[in-house]
Amino acid sequence: MSAIKQFRISKASYPEAVEWLEEALEAKKVSRQEMMTAEFLLEENFLRLAAASGNPEGFAAEISLQKRLGDVNLLLTAKGEPHNPVIELDENSDDEEERYVLASLKAYRQKMSYVRRQGCNIVSIQVHESSNKQMYHMLLGMAGGIMLGLVLKSCLGTEALGWIEHNIFSSVEILFMSVLQMMIAPMIFLSVVSGILSISNAADVGRMGGKMMVISVVKLVFALGIAVLLGSWLGAMPELVETAEMGTVEASPLSFRDLLLGIVPKNVVAPFVSNNLLQILFISCFFGLLLVKSGERLAWMKETIASFYQLVMDAMGVIMPFLPLVVAASMAKLMMSVEISALLVYVWFIGAIFLGCFLMLLVSGLFVAVIGRISPVAFLKKTASYSLLPFNIRSSNACIPQTLEFCAEKLGIDEKLAMFSIPMGIQFNMSGGGMYAMTAAILMRLTLGMPIDMEFMLSFFFAALLVTFTFPSVPGATVLVMASIFEMAGVPAGAITLFIGIDPLVDGIRTVGNAVSNATTSFLLARMEGKVQEEVYYAE
Image 1 (cartoon, rainbow, N blue to C red):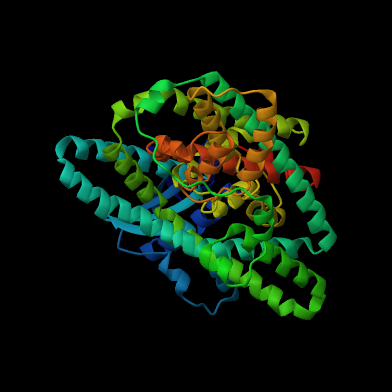
Image 2 (cartoon, rainbow, N blue to C red; image 1 turned 45 degrees about the horizontal axis):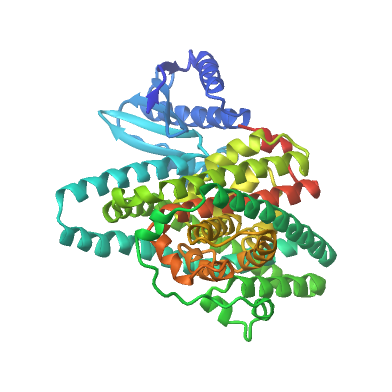
């Protein structure tokens, strides 16, 4: 936390105080609108404290600015008898002008707080709320979790560590993910339906859905191409096979027919119970298109859906602040359970996955420049900052609320379009999972001494492209689908046991690739539809 110098404010020096405040806020790159709001709240709180002092003309106070984790707060400090001007907002007034002022202040009530300290009345006014606050909190959670895990590992025995991991850290993770899983199905359904209703034209829904599919497939081809290069570059790693015995793991059968038939559910309830994403998307699109065709006849249902969507998003707003705690528990658990020496043999592979994720980000920037016809610099900078969220939460589904917010508030994508494209695009933008599985399959084929020729590569490439669309978007599930890809590559399905141990490390990288790919698709679609606010996109 860094505090700016104080300025003594009184009725006589008020103009100078406002001038000082504007200069200080400009130095912190606060927007003009935020500045005007801060001046309004400062004036009203100053007048109320002055009136309560009994000597309005001689009343004086101190104002200062504080910055904490990107937030900018204005502090108004005045000595005197206890008086909370924020409580006054609950009072009624017979004066019409005063009622108007109170109504205006109530709209900003969440930006103000009061505390009594050392004989002073202190009013805190939030001038600017950092959009990166959650990132800072997650970084603190990561750092705290790593330190806690290392300390516990060095101080406690195996039995005590196992008890703490199972009863505390794992319980925190399971509870958080259970709550998220409870909300994911209704959130996706309501988001897609609301997005379709906002488009209002069934033909536009089909056209935009077609564009999304084409963009997603093309980007996935690039991601799998990167995987082929990375797997070939790593080459044979016989020491990898020596680290464990390949057990028997049953591969999921690959069938294009089953994939298509599985999209349509046998009843409406089952997809929501099992969180079957493809079936939920089908029901959402089907139901949304029916509502579009109904016109005004079912207007009440459209309003109900909008209300329930807002309710679900409010619920997610209550859940997500607990994410840093979950991040801390996850990192502590990882530090306690993973032996650093056992990871050395995987260093090159993990490094290759990091490199692949970075290359995918650069490819996304290339798509933004070529297809979106806009400078990719802002996109790359903002996406790099956003990537910390999916890396920690390790679930594309659970990232939906923050991804929607990121696309609208950072990339400038039309909010209604994002409500349609982000949930719809989850299953078709598994670039991170596809890249990871493809790299591992090529690596294992070379390690086992199997040849890689053009005929094999073409057939395997397109088969892997198909299977990638079936990847579950929940933590750790990709490693199970890898069995199918391994068998298609001629590698024993049991070879996935070699990668289960490092899955907590690479799962976050895969999710970054998936989430960034989804955001990229939505951004490109928005650019093609002319629904990107460039002033928001270029804003810092």
